[in-house]
Image (cartoon, rainbow, N blue to C red):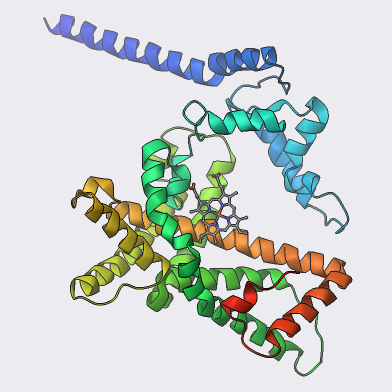
Amino acid sequence: MACGTAMVSIWIVVVSLVVLGGKLLNWIWLRPRRLEKFLRQQGFAGNSYRILYGDLKDRTAMREQAISKPINFSDDIAPRVLPSVHHTIQKYGKNSFMWFGPIPRLHIMDPEQLKTVFTLINDIQKPVMNPLLKLFAGGVVNHEGAKWARHRKIINPAFHLQKLKVMVPAFYHSCYDMVSKWESMVFETGSCELDVMPYLQQMAADVISRTAFGSSYEKGEKIFKLQTELALLVNQPTMGIFIPGWRFLPTKTNKKMKEISKEITTLILGIINEREKSMSAGEAMHSDLLGILMESNLNEIGRHGNNKDTGMSIEDVINECKTFYIAGQETTATLLIWTMILLSSYSEWQDRARAEVFEIFGNKKPDFDGLSRLKV
Ligand code: HEM
């Protein structure tokens, strides 16, 4: 009897190993080879699949090579910003693919094909995100279908002009702080060399902290620092191949990431709880992003007879706050830096922009109506 049970156990182990082995073989070899055949049949070209890594090693090497030396302002930016994509398109043409480990990524540059992709929203969905990325951007950017529509509807008021108008003083405050620092640096010497990038990144972070959490600005700043730290940690493993389950291992980085993520959640939750308390005490809703999100969420739930399933959970609200940080800071900072680069390269446009600012504002504080009259 004991011998029979042992045999059954051995069989279970053997069958499990065969099934797992089959899945692994399919994931790292059979599926990619099948996909490659289909892609080539459909007119796409690219490197042949190399087991597990695909083009990842080449991609890392090209990236390191590209950023190892500075470029001139007049140089093409594509080989610098996306060296492996640029290389693949140069080599294989506009309909090409690259291997992100066992997953092919397609480059589609024909506007008609792009239109098709965007209309087939149910068939062509967002790529499955590395779960680590959800630690700092688990909001609307990752959702699909009904969940995306529900969240999008709730966060939409945060982008309404009327709401943004109220935030202009916060923008002004952060800009003023930055420009004052620059002014004090040139105060004695009249001029100085300055790397503007860290200042603009800080300024964008500052704006988000103020506009997202308003009066809880200091906690917002703390959240922001933790988010940046988390993004750097998450960035390392997500650049390589995705190994399922790796994130659960108690490695030093994994433990640190979880610790930071928990701290961020606790901080945001603390602010939400404070808000909920003041809302039930009948205080006015805050006009910052979190306040707008909470109000819109309550309205949505209220519209459906207080059915909580029609709104967002507290966890969802926390994720949307995290997404705002990630989506809003680096993008805005980069846009401002690029604008300064262009204004420096084209001094005629710089003169025109400056003249217009003086014409509309003189020495007055910039306000919303004036800003909307700026043409240059
Ligand atoms: C110059 C500045 C910005 C640029 C270039 C930019 C660019 C983009 C792009 C390309 C997407 C689409 C991403 C995708 O679906 O894969 C996106 C989505 C998004 N952005 Fe921005 N963004 C900027 C500023 C901001 C700011 C300031 C915020 C909020 C504070 C923000 C919040 C979002 C959100 C929530 C989404 C997801 C929308 C959705 O999936 O429905 N962005 N942005």
